[in-house]
Length: 73
Image 1 (spheres, helix red, strand yellow):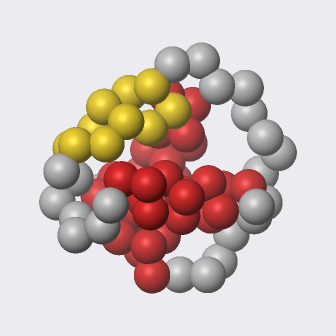
Image 2 (cartoon, rainbow, N blue to C red; image 1 turned 30 degrees about the vertical axis):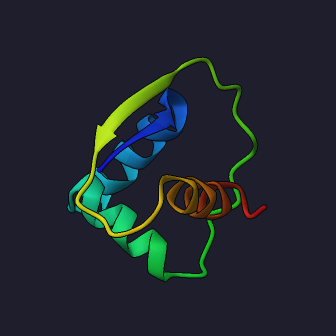
């Protein structure tokens, strides 16, 4: 599935995945099953980046979980 994610969120997730030595898709799968969050301050978003994931979730669900994980909203 292809989803459009804010470029800034993508860069944060990519850094986290490298730190955890996993793939971006693996990190997003973990995010979808956890209630943890990292409580980052809000970042200004500019444009969206399209990424390809092999997940069985709706795009809206993925974006909401990523937002909750990053900013604890």
